[in-house]
Image 1 (spheres, helix red, strand yellow):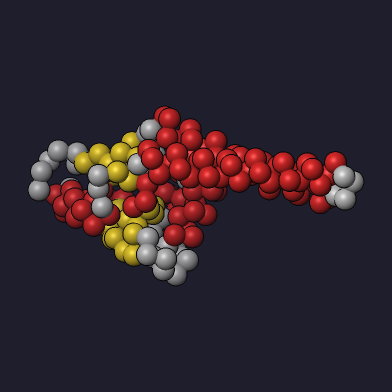
Image 2 (spheres, helix red, strand yellow):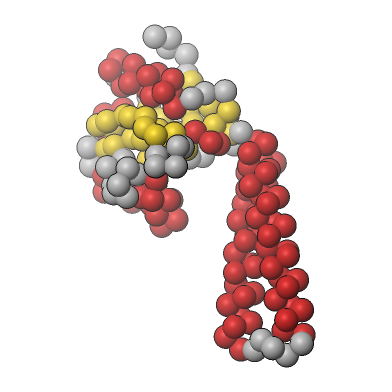
Amino acid sequence: MTSQPVVAELRRGRALLLGTLSGISGLVLLGVFLLIAATGQMEGQELVLSLCLAASLLGISAHHIGLALRRPVALRIDASGISGYFAEPAVWPEIMEIDAWQGSKGRRYLGFAFLNPDIILGRQSAWRRFSNWSRNPGFGYRYQIVISEDLLQDYGVDALAAQARAFHRAA
């Protein structure tokens, strides 16, 4: 094992693709809903819900395009612990288990389980807790930090899990 930190960068092309596709979908939905509203066939709650749906897609688009432009470090693993855009900072004594697995749709994930999950869950936003919960095997809280391989560049989750376990054993 090397003592050099492992820095997994964000896969910029994938983030741009997700941002572009959701942006185009949001703009098309917005246009369709506004055309229907202009004909008078949509009013009140239907119009508000339609605009909220289009705004949500445009927000997701802005998020992914912002990620691609800013290009933060997706995950950093070093002798002191883990950190990065997809992982709240944590030190090795807090981490109980590190695992890589394949989800039901063929996606690969890297997960970190903590000795005291409440501490790391307290550091996460509600959206981060929900997204980590939904990526867990069987939709549970076995792992409090879950990172998808789809947005990691140059590293697979198996290699990252092996490096993380080596740093964890050395700590």
